[in-house]
Image 1 (cartoon, one colour):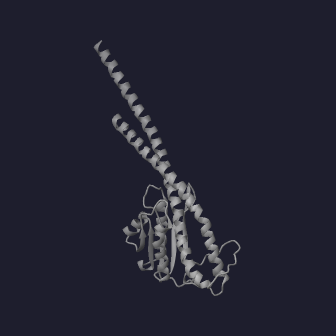
Image 2 (cartoon, helix red, strand yellow; image 1 turned 120 degrees about the vertical axis):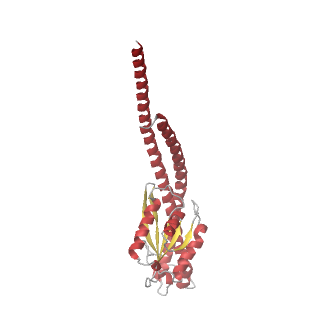
Image 3 (tube, helix red, strand yellow; image 1 turned 135 degrees about the horizontal axis):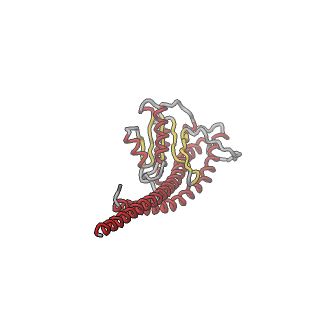
Length: 285
């Protein structure tokens, strides 16, 4: 059985750990609140640009663009959004496990796919397994702006336009609530699913639908990446907040359990000392 000193030391160390997890929970709660607002504020813009793109693409017979065309798939791109740090529960592992299993199932050769990694955890995961990482970005802000990922987004869209890969899938955690984040697979390119559920608005434009789509479609695809990043950041902070709360609760339970063991051990030691004293007095008589 552990000594009283060992038990007391473990109680103290657990209390210090609990203080750290509580502080991290409060920090994550503050970041989560702002990240959730950012993600929700971006939704109206995405809905509007999707409506405009859908109206032009479907309302004009002469509108065409390589990003709208489906072509034979020789190589597939996977854009994966993870965090730069851990201690976020299953936030990273659930996405990476899903992507890894999908790649192993769909492809037999490394020449058939390329990975675009946003986040240090995802980058390190793929590099350590010697998987083909085409582009990467780490150190993204907790409250990212579009300029933080604009170059990567443009490069990702550009690689599709250049024919480096023939389709691009995006994997990230979709934010549902503070306690629910769902792993999401979204086909980013080609843009074959841009129809909106509402009634399309008729727009007058010039010089031509094709010229407008040439500018608008890359912006739309880049906005989809940025929107997924905002969604992922809200999910990350929510997941870390929940993980740190669970850690704090577990630490409190462990402290209570260790305190009970400590008190029982101390009581047993005191009882033994009293018994020895009484025994010694009786022996002297």
